[in-house]
Length: 151
Image 1: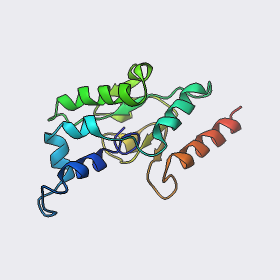
Image 2: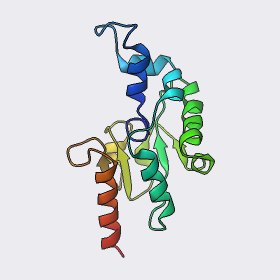
Image 3: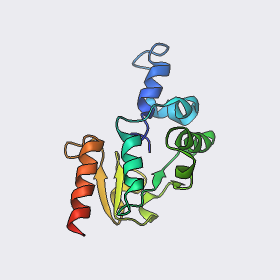
């Protein structure tokens, strides 16, 4: 979710870039302590449209799989609220919060980091933001091409 659907890092920078010096600023520490960026983060470019496109295509059944910082308990609620605000109530029933993404089943996992089991996911890990998949257009193209091969 974060870094794929949600620009959480951008929200953290927006809030703290003027109040903390570069040497004091650590995104991870802020995320572990402050829930506000989870509520205020903007969607990643093209993310909402891509999720809705995949949801309306009968060849796909997308779910939102995310890890929340366990020390920031309210972030779990904030993620749920964010999904409803930007994607809609129906998508909240497709939200799975876990610390072990490798325990989930699916053909693809679109994630920006190998953490929390993403790299060990049993299906194909699409590394969002990588050279091969820098944005949602490239991810959708890959998924469409794979779906066309299988039909």
